[in-house]
Length: 89
Length: 249
Length: 205
Image 1 (cartoon, rainbow over the protein chains, first blue to last red):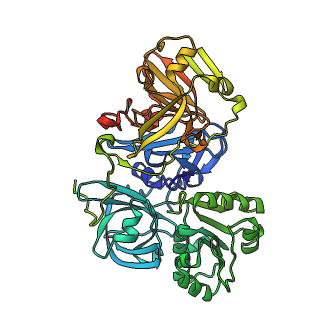
Image 2: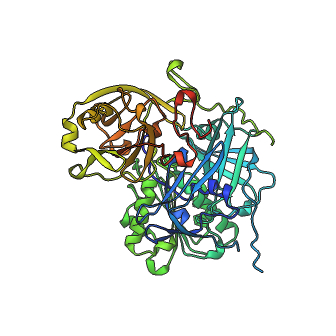
């Protein structure tokens, strides 16, 4: 496997569910760089086996970075202005 | 007071292989028994974790192929030659084998019959798996929502679920259109090229019908199709995508 | 906490090749996997530059033409990714950090640590002494051909004795600093130094 194209926030869903009790892939995420609103599942994600890096499709700001190391789960959300997760129906 | 029903955080559960089904030369389905499986919605996936005798672990994600109505978890896995997990799942695994599973995951790329339609599904290779869960659920619910599947495969022999798709299409309301990218068989009535804007336009519903659109497969296919669908005039919020990575699983 | 079920017949990857060249926990690959923290940047060589800085003061800056006019070095090295793949005998060419320091009129690094800055915002950190004495370069060619953008082209840092996330793709600035500052992955739980031979993958290893 020689090429890596971005996956998406769907692929990070499992790791994110370890942290959040609610499913986050349908959450609305607002980019702190440009204010763009997107559903996490639709946003390109990078990082492969090292972690999940979710970047704004409009301005490329790193909205969310996540890694899962033996010590535990790390989450950096400085590029996220706000996250809204709708209550389950 | 607002009470939010919190689903439990995901835990790893043990799955046992009950049945192995050969779908194509490279693809197998595993019917799994998962005690305490909480149920799922069509389009969701699971994380699978294998543990070797020396404790070594490997983990990958797979879409659930079975309809929620089926009450069990079926995974359809394509064997990737240099892969680590897929050669095991799509090659070695046999009834009685166990591994860990976590899910269901994903609230974004899901379809339930009450969401209505029309439903336009676009699949590349093993990207058809979550879309098949949607079509199986549609059938189980006896939904009359009009649906169309545009499905790209390398060759005829690589078409997953071919007979079942024909049967579902025969039941009415569902149109299945195939395209092959590496073969041009004699008597073939489908397309023989990569999915492009012209094909999406001729096969899909017009923007005015506001179809719910789900695109799944290798990343380049998904991004090109999503772009073309937006260019055709479909509203971006109606187009949902799931990227499988370079080779489709 | 209960033991996970053993998956009968699952063997994981087999480590292969001369074992003394493969660090613990690694396995050999024949391809060259791509892992990125973001989309491949589109770099225009006309506006590309590489800068050495001491804190905020520039020490030297080279345009693409100027960089390629510097003495070039070839390196054949083994590389090791923290995601467990290793690749032996990879061939690179470019300008060593020694060459850059020399071209900037310095006989040694001006500070103890380096923060590496790249197009796309990626950063990583390395002690300055791990970049000198032939241990590292800014590489522009892989296997005799210009470096593919997916693999970091036009230029990437190459520090093969550390885990490959330190060999930052699309490098643009090497900033010498007095106190260590963790870069992109180091902030997210990865080891601050990253020696594959001591299996320093994560913080605390």
